[in-house]
Image (cartoon, rainbow, N blue to C red; front, side, top):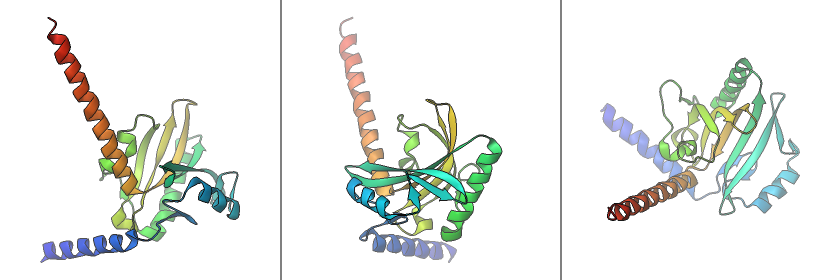
Length: 202
C-alpha cells in the first residue's frame, strides 16, 4: 500500500510539472526562463528593486547575473562576497529560510543528498569556478521546471569566496550535460584512434 501511495504521489508531481511546462516558467521576480537578452534588459529597466545589477536581500547586496543558451535565459545567479566562514554560514542560513518559506525544506547536499549529475554543471564544466553546494531544491520541490541551489564559490582568479544562489532551467542543464558528455566521448574515441595509429608504427 505504501509503495502504491508513493507511485501515486510521484505521478501527481509529474503531472503538475507537465502542466506548468507549457507556460513560461518564472525564474526570479518578473524574469522567465527563455527570455532573450533584450527582454531581460527591458525588465531590468522596469524593476526598481535592482540597481546596477545589485539586488538587496535582508540589507545585503547581491550581484545578479544572467546566463543564456542560444539567446534564451536558463540561469539566474545571485552572488555575494564574504570575508569569513561565519558570515558565509549566516548568509546561507538566511537564503535557506527565504527559499524554504516558499518551497519547503531543501535537500541538504552536504549531509544526505547529491545533486543529480545532469543538473550539476560544475561537475562537468571546467570553465566554472569551484562550488561547494549546500542546499538543493528539485523540480519536485518547486513543482515546476526550476531548480534552486545554494553554495559557496571560490574564484581562482581573484582568490575571493562568495555565497551563491543559482536558479536554473533543468531542461537546458540536461541538454548541456548530454552535449558535454558526447564531446568528451568523441575526444576519447579520437584519442584512442590516434594511439592505435601511432602504435602501428612500431
